[in-house]
Length: 109
Image 1 (tube, rainbow, N blue to C red):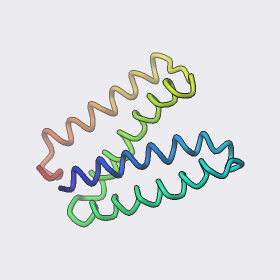
Image 2 (tube, helix red, strand yellow):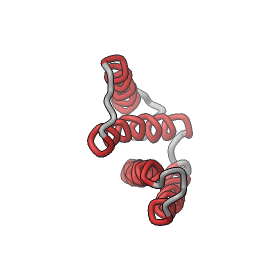
Image 3 (cartoon, rainbow, N blue to C red):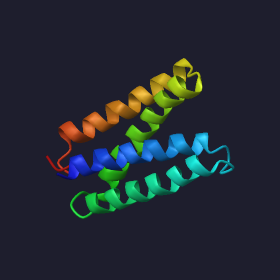
Image 4 (cartoon, rainbow, N blue to C red):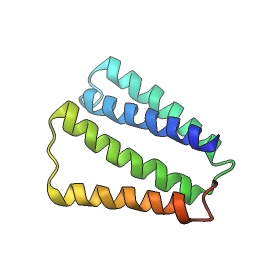
């Protein structure tokens, strides 16, 4: 169950960050409202996860996958280009998350 909640927290965080870009510096009301609600839900879900998962593990997965998803959304939705070092760096982030989940005894399985 904590992994499902963490996935939902990541989903809402990416919604919030996408809306943050679309809010144009909080000058557009609709996207600005989405930012507040989505981040609120994301942090609430993350707080629930932290009841059963170590903060370092939960935050590493939450922030790492959020970074990679937002970079993909930026590429697809906002036409933001990624160079090779950026793509390689995100590959390393994903590799780190896999190592944590597959081999660490600190992560709940």
